[in-house]
Image (cartoon, rainbow, N blue to C red):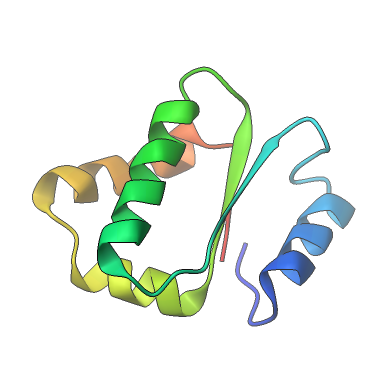
Length: 89
C-alpha cells in the first residue's frame, strides 16, 4: 500500500482496509540515517521469522534505502513481500 501521508495515517488506512490487525507487531521506519534504516530493516526481517508484523517506511527513508542497498540486502528487501504481512509506504 502506498500513501503520501503521515505514517500513522497509513497504519489507520491499513487497519480500515483489513490489511493488518492489532495482533501484528508494528515497525515504523522514519529515520534519515542510512545505517539506522538498514539496521531497522534487518531487525524487521529477523523478527518476521517468529512474529507476524508489518512495516511502515516513510518515502524519504525508502528513497535513502533504495540508493544504498547492498546486493545481499537488496535480495532480502525483494523478498519482504513474502516475509512480511504488509509493507506500508
